[in-house]
Length: 475
Image (cartoon, rainbow, N blue to C red):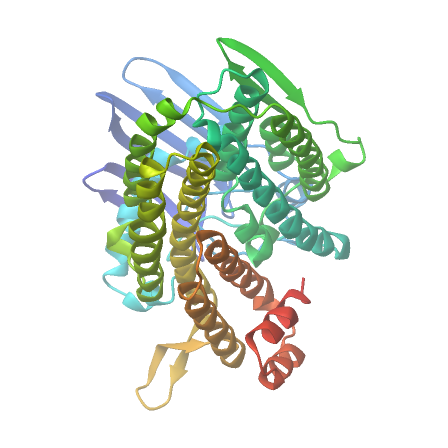
């Protein structure tokens, strides 16, 4: 295949859809002419060599799993799919690694050519398959790893809830306390929230079949060590480190390491929360009165930025309308007016705390509502396959996988949305929204499991709570 496109020149061979031999690319990057060569064997990327008109040459030889190395040395194809899996080759590399980053520029050209090919055969596009691409090995989960995944889901939720509880304590000081424990705790929480962003799709990957296409005992495990072994806490131009101890046995597997590390983080969080409660400080009420409207305005602006109006979901919209009308424009506004007028100091403090805790809860609701809306698209595609329709003679008609289970769970989610809309406080609403998120993750987990007994039980259940209990028993 040869192509001169808007990105540059691309030339290479693919056999049965798999990249083979030497692929060559020419493209511009930051005003430099780059020549790139990739060396493939049956879709396995072995090396990337790049040179520029400045005379610079970079070579990268790819680390392979022991199973893949055996394939390369003996031509045994035991664990490979032997069909195009993705444009990017990944044998268990973190997304930030040089192995993934080195492919990005050339992949832009490959995707451009692929889009052109799809114009001639749209069935490929509708089936979400590739005309060409790289090979991928399969690394099945063992029985223990299946258990670890369900444990990870629970401990991740527990840790996130703990962080939010601690925030309810520190938020009363508006992040401006001079108390050393409060400042340290605030900085620690910020570190955890950055981790949540970095590991944001981890549960989704773990609970779907996707994790079985990553070799997990080398670079992914090392990346987990790099991200989680130590927290660097920056306070007053100084850096303090928290090291999370785990056993050598737990470090042998990415799942056991994550579980052990999060257990240690929970211990640290509880200790900080206890110290924060002992050292809770309060600002002068004059300062509180001056800062509170600014705080409310800042939180409103933050909420507006969280939810993307271009990706609106009907049910989520109903929920956010409820939040805005009943809490932002209702309870919080009423409490703030009362805060300004009351002379009782204890009442002022209670109202201030209530407003800030409600704002924090609403912030979490908006974030969760957005992730629920985005995850729905993923779950929908996960439970969709394309089949042949004898009436239209088309082989790309969408069909629902496990339709009964999918419809039952969708009904549960709709009922939970309605329950959330009827709540009286942000905290009550947040608990219901967290339940919706949990149900989505459970549905991802059930994609490749035997679900007939669960479907029958859900059909017999009379109440929403009974159905929720049944679904939670799965994990």
